[in-house]
Structure formats: C-alpha cells, structure tokens
Length: 221
Length: 221
Image (cartoon, rainbow over all chains, first blue to last red):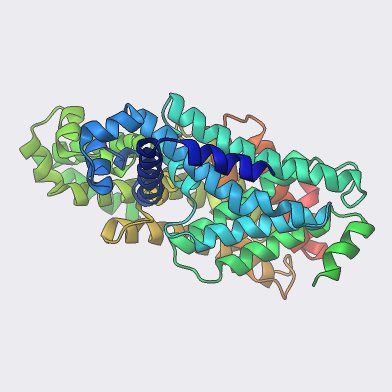
C-alpha cells in the first residue's frame, strides 16, 4: 500500500525534477565507488562534473559544495550497506540466527565490493581530522555497531545469549573480524580471509551462546 | 663489539654527510606524523621542504621523488614500530608470555600514537591502487603478521599452544583486535576500546593454550 503511494508521488513530479533525481543518483553511485578506492577527498566538483557529464555549475546546483557532496556520498554508501545487510534481517529467525545472518551478510557485502569496505576507507582518511564529514563517518559506524548490539540484545532476551554478556563488547569483536577480513582481502589479496573471518565469528557467537542458542546455531550447520 | 664498529664508521664520516643524515631523519619523523593524520599523498615535495626548512631541490637531493619519499617514510614508520614493539621481545620469557607481551606492546604503541596506527591509515589509502607504495605497505603488514605467527609457533613448540592450532589464523585474529581498537580510539573516541581489545586478545590466547600455557598466562594476572 505504502509503496504505491510513493510511486504515485514520483509520477506526479514534473519531469525536470525526475531528471534531476536521476542525475543525483548517478553522481552518488560513482562517488561511492571513487571514494572507496581513492578517498572522499578525490570527489572534487570538477571531476564529478566530468563523470556525470554535466557542467560544474550544474553539479554545484545539485550538491552546493564539495563537503555537501562528500556528506551525500556517505549517506548513499550507508543506504546501500543497510539495504543489503540490515534490511533483510526481517526474514531471519529472531535471536542468535538473526545475529549470525546479519554478520554473514556484512562479510559477503564487503568481500563482494570492489575496493572493500567504503567506511573503512573513509574512516582512515578522516579519523585525524575534525568536522561534519568525520562526524558523519563516525555516526554511521556507531549505527552499525549498535545495530549488531541490538540484535544481540534480542537474542539475549530470547535466552540464546548468556545473560551476563555485554552485547556492545560482542559487537566490537564481531566488527574486528570484518575489519581484518577487509584488510586481508583488499590489501594483502589473501583469499583465505573470508574463511578465517567466518571461523572466528562463529567461535565468538558460540562462546556467547547459552545451550539453547548453541543448538540453534549448530542446527544450521 | 659490533656496535663500536658502527659507531666508528659514523665518526669517520665527513660532517656534511652527518648533517645530511640528520636532515633526512628529521624529514622522515615529520613525514610519518603527517602521513598518519593525512595520508602518504599529503607528502608533497613542496610541503616537506617547508617542514624541513630546506629548498625543494635540497629535499629532492635527499629523496629523489615523491614516491621515494613515501617509501622512505614507510620504512621509517616500520623501523619505529618494530623497535618499540618487536625488539623488546628478547627480554620476554619465551613462549606464550612472549606472544602476550608482543601484542600488549602493539596495543600500547597504537593507543599512544597520535592519529593511531600509521599502517592502518596508509593501508586504507593505498589498497585500491597498484605500485611500489602499496606493495611496501602490504609487505610491512605481512611481516607483522608473520612475526606474530612465528612467536606463536615457538609457544607451540614449547607446549604452551595447542598442537592442532593454525598460528597464522591466530595472528589474523590478534591483528583484528588491534584494528578494531585503533578505529574505536581514533575515530569513535571510545576510551573503552583498549580494555575491550585486551579482553578479547586474552580470551583468544587462553582458548589457544594448553593447560601448561594457560597456567603461565594466568600466573601473571
């Protein structure tokens, strides 16, 4: 129902606005790719205007400034990651299997992305600076961590995870293996990286589980 | 004995060469700091000449090109890390305590360095590119991993680590917590990061230990 209302809204928009949105989406798609490989500083107005085949003034009309373009690129990267990794969790069985599914999709997403994790790339670029771009990178990474912790909290409520366990610490550790896999795959070219990461993630999950949780986790192989 | 021969060599060098070495060392010290915060691409000849208070031609006399300067900066950063973290291992008791000491010094080094781990910063900057700078970053990270694995192999020979355990996988996992601590400290500003990393490192080491190794590890607190 909601989707058709959204669709109607789009249909009612004048065609020059639709064209503008398509341009904006096209610029942001390239921007996420370029920033993953070369960093957010590589997103100059001149370069992105060339990529989008529009004038610099046209590009500035869409994004106002380089910083606003960087922030929009972060938002686009976040949306893409959350759609691929977090949105499907509704079809996972609630509890420990949902947590396992979430981290498995994150490992798949990172290993299938050319240049690796967009957020790791831009985190290293901006962690020595101040400002809204750095704050936005940090907020997105915190959001991912807290998503992991919340799903782990649900698993705890369902009795799948040990009561005394700190789910924010568990999220830190799960994320650690994502970071290491990303480094090994994309810098060291180690094809064993994903196998390693999955093994240690599984060990972590099993050590966090109650007997009930462990049965669920090992049931699926 | 060997040291005094080295010292003599230095004494015999003409003074202009000694001055040259001091300038080179000074440039590289600043270069490591700048690259940690802003990346290796920030090391332009113009900027580094200004930092060193010499002419561009003078700086090029020392380093030949921006790429050679980047490579020399990586070598300087590597030397610094290995001197602080790896060299003291001779005074650690051989085996599991040496491995624990090694990783503890690495966590200390990273948490005490402004801007965090130099190699994480430049790994993210260069993992999407080709060339000698990328190859050098990868080689240094591989060397660190293999140092961890070799020390773990010694611990295995001494019966401190379980026979069937893959020490390269253990090195991957130990490194993962370094990476996560670095991110949490320097991007998220989470002061709990080091406590988290030490906890999970300890859990990993304990799960890798034989009963003998475990007694050694827990003896020290």
